[in-house]
Image 1 (tube, rainbow, N blue to C red):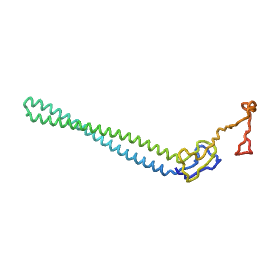
Image 2: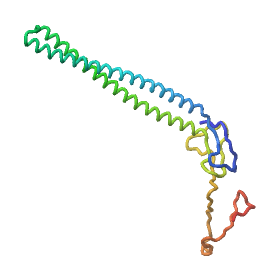
Image 3: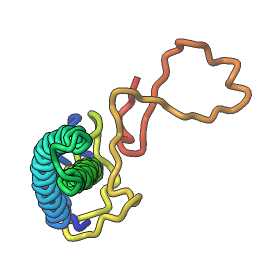
Image 4: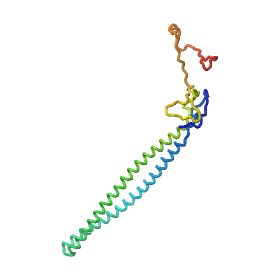
Amino acid sequence: GHLISVKVINNQVVKKGDLLAEMDPTPYQLKLNVEKSTLRQQTASFEILKTKLAMAQKQLVSTQTKFKIAQEQSARYKKLAKDGAVSRQEYEDKLDVLESARNKLTAAKEECVYWQDSQAVQSTVIEATKAKVALAEYFLKQTKIHAPADGYVVNINVRPGDFAAKGQPMFSILDNREWWVKANYKEYLVSMLKPGQTVWVHTDLYPFRLYK
């Protein structure tokens, strides 16, 4: 993204967590807004599916009751028809009612399964969108660049308005918690070096200062 500010200069001492630079957060904020809006819509759809499932389950209970009544009536009319108390047609009418009730019960069960499956799918979609929201929040947070450790800022090669590309270093932090010196010695001097021996070091940055 484009840098909108650089808060430090070369050789500046910083503490861990200090703000070093900021990138334009606008595209990342917009992306987050879109994902949050999508999540709200999907959540609202999930609530609608819950309502439809509840209605389907309520309808299933009612259909099961009607089917049970139709079973009882058909069994009673079967006995009555056998005894000649009702006509064959009246018995067959009850069988038709039973068949209709059975078909409605099957449909009610299938509808419940449909809304349950739809709710499960929507739940998966919501979880995926939540992950996208979390990722968008992470990228938005990365537009503020903070010092990872105490140290000195060196090699600044960016300024406000520059485009910060992925993998392109903008500056370096010299961690001042640990220092080491890389030195090349003549072979004949190596035998004179002992563990724990005091050394004096000077650097090109501070040529007139010696470090013990």
